[in-house]
Length: 227
Image (cartoon, rainbow, N blue to C red; front, side, top):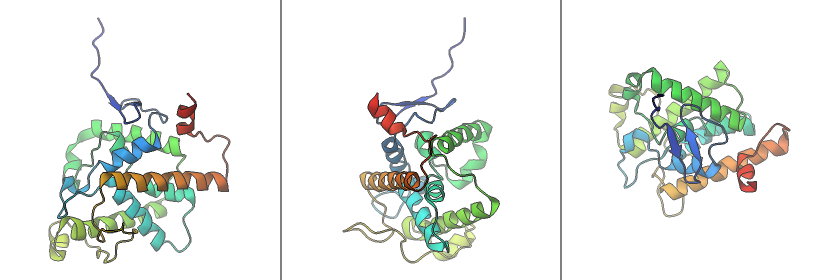
């Protein structure tokens, strides 16, 4: 008798299911991804505000920083790559491990994350990183983290270097358009973070198609609607 393997499926808001061990690029909708990232929290969910900071808002922040620091505008494909740099954290079940924990998660976690990243790359036809561009991305990501540590979590500047090893100077101004009635750097409610993330994601997908239509591109959301 064959021993049944443990369940490795996640069901999304849309009702779609993703097999974590064999992830298919058509297993989620843009709304599923935006919802998942808006409910996945940075910094272990800790915040000096009423709400935690979502990975969706963080992803938008990294994209905004990259756009500000880049001499020439990012192409839609490059912007998508920035926006989706943490997409696997929603697909793996809303898990953004804090940095000290990552070395202890083991090869099993790393392998699942690699498979999910491959599915994301295929789904959105993301351009591969070059060494130089990935370095620029990591600078923006770390600058976002330094700013979040100060403005969102509440670390004091001397402790950023001493305790967290952060050497970058945090930004003073929030690079995102601050929603009405909210303060700069304040974490957004999940529904707002999801809405803004999905709007940006869909806008970049449309922009890339308008610039360079790809006969091989598949709009998985449209395929699902037709079915």
